[in-house]
Image 1 (cartoon, helix red, strand yellow):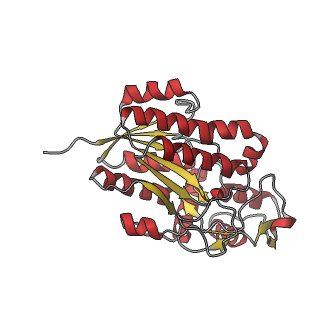
Image 2 (cartoon, helix red, strand yellow):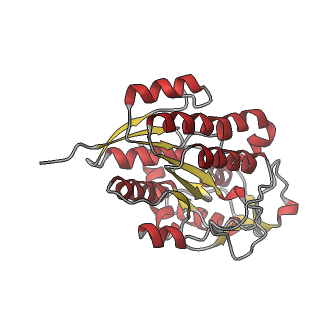
Image 3 (cartoon, one colour):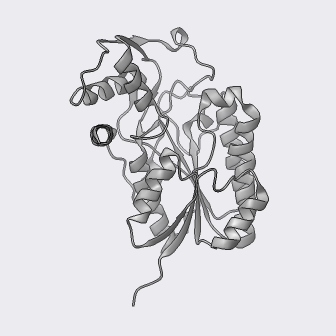
Length: 301
C-alpha cells in the first residue's frame, strides 16, 4: 500500500530557486506540488496568504519569494522589507495557525564578510545593506513566530534562467570586448538545481520524522572569486558561441562600485547540514557546464 504524496506549496515559483525546486519536486512521486508565482500569491498580503493555505492545506511550505537583488533593495528599501521581512512574518503567522512547517531560503548577505575563513550558523550576523538586513529580519520573524522551520542560507545562486550573475555576464560577453570582474570578493557559487536537490532531501527526511528544525548553510563546493567564476562561465560558453569578449580584467571592489555594499567573503561553512542531514556539497563547476549547455540548447530552439 502506497502512502499519499507529501503536499508542498512553493511560493515565488517563477524565480530561479522556485523554478528549480518546483521542477525537481514535480518529477518526484513522493510529492504533490502546488507552485505559485509572485503574482499568484503575494506574501505581503496576509489575508491572501491565509486564504491560499486554507484552500491548499499543504504539509509543507517552501518560501522562495522575495526581493533578491541587493542593488534594487537599496533603491527600493520599502519594497525589500515588505517582501523579505513582512512577507515572511505573514507566512510564519499563517503557517503557525495551521501547524504547517516552513522551509525558507535566506542569504549569505546576513554577514558582513569580514571572516576570511567563512561563516557557520553560529557566527554573529552583521548585514551591510538593506538586502541583508531585510532578509535577516525575515529570518527573525520566522524564528520567533513558528518553531517548525528550516532556514536555509545559500550563496551566489546561478541557473540558466531568471536574473543572475551568470546570465548577466554572458550578455556582457556578447557585446563587450573587455569585461571587468571583481577579484577580491570570495564565495561559493551554487546552482539553483543543486539547491533544489538539497531542499528535496531535507523535505524527505523531515517528512519521515527527522526533528531537525533550525538554520543551515549550503553552497557549492570550491571557493572562488567573481573573477574566477567569470573565467569559468566564459570558458564554458565559448564551447557554444564565439563571444565578443577577448579580455577579462581583474579589478578590486573599490574600482567597481555598486549601489549595495557586498560581503568580501561569502563563504558558507556546510558542516552542520552534513552532520544533521548527510547532505554533501557538490562542485559548482560541473553544474555550471551542465547549465550552460542547457542554456544554449534553449537558445537554439
